[in-house]
Image (cartoon, rainbow, N blue to C red; front, side):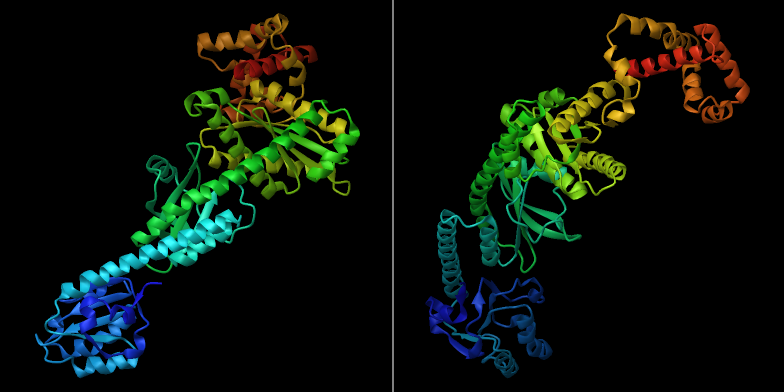
Length: 544
């Protein structure tokens, strides 16, 4: 509670003054004390102001005197103390009448009382009372935290105390739904960096419910990482020093709560990760144990599952550039897993997401009543969307994703992981990084990739595409690209020429040069097979 006008009338200089009107408004609370001796000062009032004045600014303006009380009431002021016997022998009757009408206290200051006799002791009492209120609040908060109340209860207490909306954001999934879910725009990169650098509360402008709002943002830092933030939004009244003080004091409580939640989630996740790796790699032989643990986690292994493996590109470079120690590396992985889980839940719903080594593994169930082909198409589309959206959480990272065919049961899970992992291992040299590669799409590359280090494969390449690549490099021609498009458009010269913006006769000439240089004819099946395989090998070597 703040100091009321009734309480203020007992403090030093005011104790020798009298309430001239508005007695029924003595319950009004005072937060600020100010002097009003210049025009238009009303525009700068904050609300809950106790105002000292001699009415000098409006001594010759009867209309302003009549409007004064109404204006102060509209601004939410607490009371008006008028010093008489300077410009007015008594308080104007129009002011007294308005004060009684609006229950707004008017105090008459005795001539012998100076402004400082009121301003200094009243300000001191307000500050002292606020300090007592804060200490009471934190004693209450400490007791509440010790009793194990939820984080949302703490946020609710802080919000009521500050009388402004307060929200908590965290990389840790909060145990219960929050009313502000999906309404807060994420911190920008510059805002995150500023919070990490300052390690203290900062005034910012953020977006809530698509509206820009002034706010105070307090970082919650664990192990040197920005784990979340506490934001006080200016929804009810202007910020005060009190808001900053409370947020800074509350942040450590929430940091401890988040650390406990984070630790619990990570321990639970580790058990899941270890169990799933045991299933996928055959380290758990007992079907009874597998069934029992799967039931514990709510997993049903009696369905068909397609597997997607997310493998981060250039992870070792990311470690060298940004993740300086093991704590940062593990924190990065856990953050990635939580972000992926949230995206997968949004796009696919009922799926299993685990972390093994440096890879994220997603298992998507196919229910017996569903059309398997349609479900698989939905799965791949969702994975492609998730890959795109992961860039928002990890702007410096890309993922190559391997997708298996659907397989049934425990053995099917293992087969699915092998296929998804092979899709990355075999497909990344061919299709490049930051791609989604389905096992079925590998085609002949499944065979060629197994021979990638073979001298015979290199010899075959040099007898076909290698000759064309060397010729193009020497003569500035495009024979290899012409051959690629010729195959891509199923030997249709017109379509291939159109794609290259050249005349069909020009393409025919180039294809004759291909035959002359490689000594393979495009008019017989064997020659086409050699040249097509040569193109596949060139494509594989180019991305390797």
